[in-house]
Image 1 (cartoon, rainbow, N blue to C red):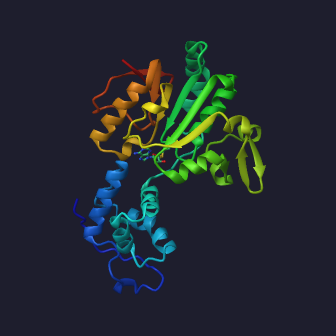
Image 2: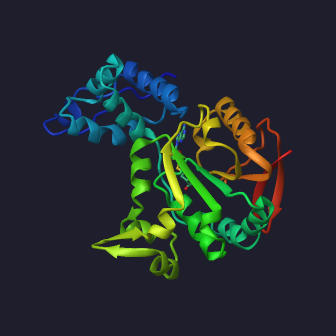
Image 3: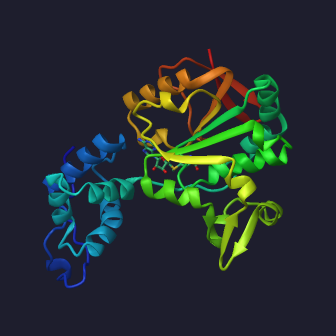
Length: 290
Ligand SMILES: C[S@@+](CC[C@H](N)C(=O)[O-])C[C@H]1O[C@@H](n2cnc3c(N)ncnc32)[C@H](O)[C@@H]1O
């Protein structure tokens, strides 16, 4: 993992522009790649200089450090776990929106969820939003269930993510205008949110359907129990083939008979060794365990 572009010249307050010292040395670029991979499984290639700089710069400034190199040196000592967590959190990509890929939620409302709840019989339907980011996916599911007139007391939704900051934010169920503007239909916004100042607070009836917790998908998630439906969307793209295969195999063990996995629209299991069978509903693909 050699860095082809070792000279980075970020404009920190007081820096001398083009004459400023490089802020990520080749040694620390390699350290960051290795460290982030070890702590999250996220692969950051040799051309991600700008990403490290733009994501780590705010931490450098907030901590009053001289440079990203200084931040790396501090993280490498292992003496500041809180700082290390912030570095890892900063390098996760938390991009998400409500009802991402609308067709999937439509087919869940009309077909998949009613079928799963019927099959669940007297037990609760269990759904897992793995890599839930700031919660939009999990709350979209909760709203979909309510819109499908499924009794919320018969459902349990768990949202998990590696990034501590997004887990905390998801649990608040509070979103700014820009966030609800991304994917939340106006009628559902009016029905399931309350305006609080400039923000939108999801109503307790929706928030109480979802629980969030921190979880690394590479670790054991046996403690979460088994699920009828797992959404693992737009996260596998950040991993290498080995990590992807391991996560996909672990998820298969958590899926109840008749249950299914959903990936992001641009994701497939092609070239991954797996035990799933493709099931197509309308234009949407689900994966059942063979
Ligand atoms: C792009 S978001 C996807 C959010 C949502 N699933 C969606 O499709 O809109 C990817 C999320 O994966 C999380 N993530 C990255 N590595 C992870 C890991 N090893 N374990 C659990 N979550 C991880 C990130 O923190 C981030 O919030």
